[in-house]
Structure formats: C-alpha cells, structure tokens
Image (cartoon, rainbow, N blue to C red):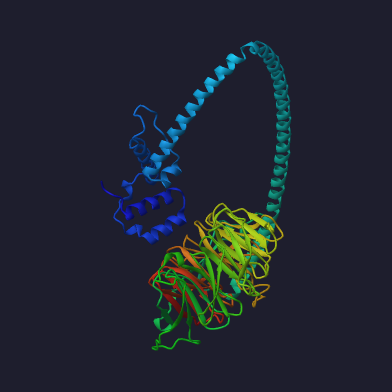
Amino acid sequence: MSSLTSVELNFLVFRYLQESGFTHAAFTLGYEAGINKSNIDGNMVPPGALIKFVQKGLQYMEMEANLSNGEVDIDEDFSFFQPLDLISKDVKELQEMLRERKRKERDKEKDRERSKENDKEIEREHEGDRSRMKEKDRHEKQKEREREREKMEREKEREREKMEREKEREREKMERETFERERERLKLEREREMEREREREKIEREKAHEKQLGGGDRDMVIDQSDKENAGDEEHGGSTAAEPMDITMTSTSQPCHIPSSDVRILEGHTSEVCACAWSPSASLLASGSGDATARIWNIPEGPFKSGFHRSINALILKHAKGKSNEKSKDVTTLDWNGEGTLLATGSCDGLARIWNTNGDLISTLSKHKGPIFSLKWNKKGDYLLTGSVDRTAVVWDVKAEEWKQQFEFHSGPTLDVDWRNNVSFATSSTDTMIYLCKIGETRPVKVFAGHQGEVNCVKWDPTGSLLASCSDDSTAKIWNIKQHNFVHDLREHTKEIYTIRWSPTGPGTNNPNKQLTLASASFDSTVKLWDAELGKMLCSFNGHREPVYSLAFSPNGEYIASGSLDKSIHIWSIKEGKIVKTYTGNGGIFEVCWNKEGNKIAACFADNSVCVLDFRM
C-alpha cells in the first residue's frame, strides 16, 4: 500500500485553504512549503480532496473497529462512533469502547427483565385496587388534559401578541432606517455638490497656475467630460462637473541611483520583513524570517564613491538554537520616541524590548498567536501589540507586565495605531475597526463599513482623522466625531495593503502644506488623496507588481514606494513623476526614510537590506 508523502499532504492542505477562502494562510503555507516547486499536477486533484481523504480514513477506522471486535455478532447492527473518538483513539481503544457499550446494553436488558418481573408481582398483589385506581386516573387525566389545553391556548395567545409586537417594532425600525437613509442621501448630495463647487474652483486655480508656470515635464491625463464641464463653467454654463481625475506620468526617463550611492547590508538568512530608522541616531533596525532582528550602524553623510566599508550589525536572536525557526519569525518592529529602545514582535506571540547595545531588556508574554503589529505610544511608557489571537494588549513597559487586554475582534488583529498616549485604533480580518481606551472595557467607538479584511489603520498628525484600507479595494477616512466614514476612496482596482498620511498640515513640521493620504495597492499603483475633499489628486503608475510599502519624505515632498517587482521608486509629489529609482534582487516588503530625509532603507525578499543615498 502506497503511503502519502509530506509534499502531497502539504498540497492537500494548501488546496483546502484556497478552497475555504483562507487566502493569506494558503499564501503563507505555499511559500514556506515550496508548493510551487512540487511536481504535483493540481488539475488531477479534485475539489475537497482533503475532506474526502479524512472522511474515508474515519470510515476505515470505524469499519476496522467493528470487524476486528471478536465479541460482536456478525448479525448485530453496525456501531458508529463520534468523529472525535475516531481521531483521538486507536483501534484497540475503539474496540474497548464497543465492548463496554455492548456490556452496558446487556446490563440494561437484564435490568429491564428484572423490572418486568417486579411489575408482574406488583400487578398480582394490587389487582383488587387497579379498577378503582383506573377510574380515578381517568378523571385526573381528563382534568389534566383540560388544564393542558387551557395552558396551550394561553401560550398561543401570548405568542401571537409577541409576534404582533415584533412586527410592529420591525415596521417602526424599517421606517426609521428608511428615514435615516433618505436623510443621509440628501446630506451626501449636498456634500457632493459642495465638493464639486470647491473642485471647480480648485481646477480654475490650477489652470491659472499652470498658465503662469508654462509647460512642465509631466503629462496630465484628464477625463474628457471634466474638460467639457470646465469649459462650460468658463462660458457661464451651469452643468455640475465631477472632480478632475488626474493620472500623472513621467515624460522623461527616471534617474537610476548609481551603485556608489547604494549599500547592501547582508547577514540575514531569510526574507527581511520589516525595517525602521531610529528617530535619534543613524541606526537602522531590520527584522527577518531567520528569527533575528539586527541593528545596523549606518555612516552619516553621503556614501563615498569607491569606498565600500562593510557595515556591522548587532544581532538580536529570538531563538536559542538554530536560526530560521519559523515560529520565531520577526514580523514587526518599532523604535520608541527617544530612539533608546527597540520593540520587536514575532510569530511565537512574544514581544521583546532591546536597547541600542543589542541587550534584551524585557520579554512580554500574553498573546496566544503571532504578533502582526506593534507600536510605542508617544510618551514611551506603553507598548501596544496586535495578534492573530484576535486581541490587542497594552504593556506597561516600566513594570514589564501587561496592563490591559482588549478582546473585541472576532478575527486576527492585523494593525494597531495610537491616537494619543491612552487611546488607539485596531483593525482585523473581521472587517471591523475599534477605537479603544486604556481602562475602558468596551470600545469607545466602532467603525463599520469595509467589506473585506482591514489591513492597515493610521491616525492623521492631529489625531482627529483615521484612515483605513482593506482587501475590498477601498480606503476610507473616518472622523472621531462621526460614526460613518467621511470619505470612501474607491479608485483602486485591487486590495490596498497599506496607507500613510503626509507629514504636512496642522500638527506637523510642515504646517503650511496640504494634508494628503497615500495608498499602496496590489493593482501596482500608489495613489495620492486630498484628505479634506476625499478626491484623488494623482495616481503613480510606475510599478509592474503589487506595491507593499510606501513612505513620505520628512519634508512631505517625495514618496518612496517598494514593490514585488523588485524596484524602489521615489516620486516627486510636486512634479508627479519618478525622480529616482533602484532595482534590487527580490520583492520589497518595506521602505522607510531616515529623520534627515537623505537616506532610504528597504528590506527585500532575497534576505538583504538596502540603504540608498538620496540627493536631488
């Protein structure tokens, strides 16, 4: 009899996850098990193969337990077992259960026989009393039936009254909902009209500005209907124009970053998932699937041409034994505001805190699943973690213990972000967003509106607007003072993986510049949005594969984006084009700028970290 190989079993589990809609789990298993490298023809494997395989195995165990039991008569009925018994017990234990069941049945049969004999004896002893008791019982039963009928009638009447009340409440609820929807529709129409008016004014200002500046080196692809509407307005027409949809593309070739301006940091032995610059020093942290994080001391100033001195790193080991222990993948990391402590989260469910010398300061244990997101609050006294176990935990860093666990989501927690030092937002695969506060046992606010997994949540610099993005291909902007989203951003055609607010506007170092929101999607584009109007300002269409990461420069003038097409593009927001580009040897999972804005780091699937000099 041929046996099932581990490769074949992995493929069956992979197919089961795909068919069940567990896309992320299937992707992870397929990547780690190397499914694409197997020689199995997926067309030969029927749908539901794993379920059928398990069911047949259970049926075989059941048959074996019945046929191998010597005490069972061949003419007796076939005995069935609970699925959990078939999975958790071997054949001998199942046979013992079957024998015990038969013994109990025989004992019950004997008890029934004895009971019958006793009944006959009692019947003989009380034969004289039976006729009187029968008459009495008949009268009692008659009364009991009358009482039962009356009771049933009363219950039916109460049930009818209850149903009538429910129907009435339902009608009232539907009327209220219809009224609310109509009021919301009218409100949205008024808001859209106001937005159109503001957009028309903005278009006119931009046209005037373009005329002053003259022709640039960018192409603006403008929807023809917008042009016609703008023309109608110039000639006094009253037709309302939709906001202008602008896609900016470069008319000149982007400048490739020379190798002299690039330093490749090698040392990790598995894909590098996360990277982050220290806010106070020229230190770069990276986290990898090799169960380590590393702190790299990057030389300040421009890289010297022709001088490639190796850059050493402190290795922060998350596994005592060999590295590449997948249960200890470092999935996320974050520096505290002073740059003195680095927090890491990993697949073993532990959060760890390290100092800049690479010493392990604290190990924080509470989660029962991998940690996917981790953030320090601004004050630096609390650390926030989100896990696959559906919870978020706030840790008291000084006390080295958990302060509060928030168990609101019904699916894995994908992202967390502090609003201030005591309140934060969480997002999940359950499509929900919760605003939580330390000390509160229920969410302070619930944001519902996405139709798919919510991958990322980010507060704007003032903490009044929350942006979110989802597998439903939309990003949304929420206001803390409202229950529904204020803007629904729907220009992407595939899942949106991440979003970032610009470091501009109130509460930033660039208060006189416009606040914008950038989104990166699996449709290979990065889009820039007007946070006030909720309209797309431009679409950056230079990548060929899904874009996993983006970051604004500290002055808010540039965006760096990293994609699975192995390239980093640096976009000028003002010019709407790529000004620098670099192509590595693997897909890019994260990009980030240093505090001075003159270096960009990126982590790659080929186990490397790359640092680019950025000078314009």
